[in-house]
Image (cartoon, rainbow, N blue to C red; front, side):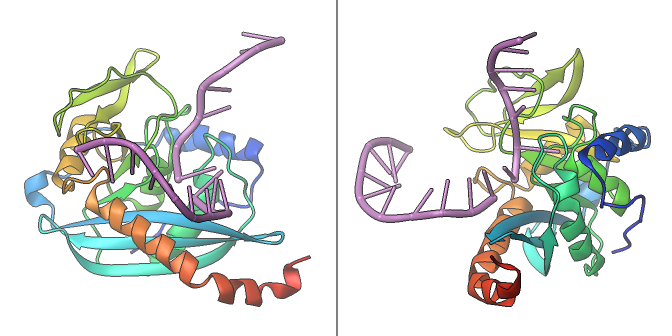
Length: 241
DNA sequence: GCGACAG
DNA sequence: ATCTTGTCGC
């Protein structure tokens, strides 16, 4: 896939917040691809492991055919990470490795699902929105927990959802993807609206808490990270105290 | 000033 | 996210 180079990632937390303020003005939170026109959807996720002072990150992108949800392409990438986890600045920790993985993707998806928020962010530029701008493709944020905003508990049946509101604005939705389980927080990333985002996420669910793209990316990235743990530790021996 | 806080 | 055995529940 084509990946735009909008700004450097080697920045301080202070600069990171300023960059988000700048990028949010370019976001497009409306419309989105019609479910009937979707042919391919993708899911992306990361996994971390610390070896001494070095933190290694694995990034994975899985492309599925839609609506069959069959895997058609998978990409795995590994990089070192220096940016710390800071609530609200997640993209600066995860984007580098994920964008590298996306560069290797051949089948451009009609929409990409990320494990984190999109518009439901303090500055309206969560991971999904930030990467949507770099990829110039519709994206959706699928977070397992809330970052900001409030939502009524959705009904217990699968598909039920309530609006996630922050400062009087609807920024996403709490969606019941699996009965008996806490709701999934869905929010627009880029080039899509709340309603369409929820519709697509539900169309990607097969009974599990997470939609297939994200669920498969999560399973694959964790497996890769663990399978290469020993080799990675050995390769980084010189850098370990 | 005191909580809350994606992964 | 990651560290971790067994265990309660659908």
